[in-house]
Length: 406
Image: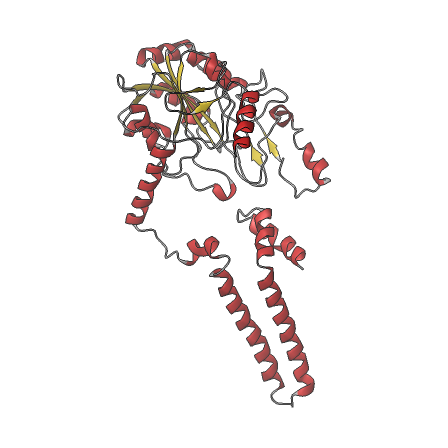
């Protein structure tokens, strides 16, 4: 019975953005209520039939209708118990929504989100570049700067309309941004959803719009160096429920990454964990080679970073990603002096980024995961006490020792 109900409800709720896994969980959690509704329906039908034999003529139809009405009343009561019981947290925004959020509530919420940004953005490394006290001009590189990641996917997604983006954050703090670079990015791809870039629980276009190296003309780079000696590089990665973060982007580009979907699910079209695609930024090369994961740099990103890091003495990397990226490239350039972790920032938390760059906010955030990228011989603390490791073996040794200590 429950499996039949799941099969009926899944396509309906999928169209509303609910994942099949959630539908299954809800149905099983509400199984007692479902069986109660089914049992009382059977009882109502039995009574409606029985009255035809045991109740005298004239009132049979009244008894039959009364049994059905009683069942409807029972369903209403059970539905209320569900709405204000096990499903209340999910339905409260709908049940209690009166058509508008007061300006006071909205302002209070945005203030809390900004405070979370102040306390949550993590300074992963700083070799004296931050804070920026001697300049108000910044060159911002990386297409993701124009379309940052604000949250997750599936249940973690929301409208991005009106969110504080990276460029607005910088301007709000009094920084002047090199508009020539930004205009180039906008002309290349105005929107993260343009031409695909769909991220859902059923299918994902993992494309990373990033202009190839020939877009960074000699004139543009010379103007950028004249504008400021500071460069901020923004790297963005999405992620969320219902979709695998590809471990082989080369296969995604070739269109063969869906093969596990066939082997693991015996060709079940409803199994969409690996359903995805990717559009290259150049016809001359693939952004990723076979075996590279989505959390590594694309070739186009590496080319951009190389251009920036070899042309500027003060480079700050902002990792706008919801998952740990591979950051070994940081140690390849002496010019990269600071790394900031700024995952999905919601509506207003990106404002904290500019305050941290300016030094008006001391970043006190800590990552919940370890980013292995330090190539030094021994583990070391950076200026703000974040622990880094030279390799995976070091990390495993530290973890094992810590585990034994408990």
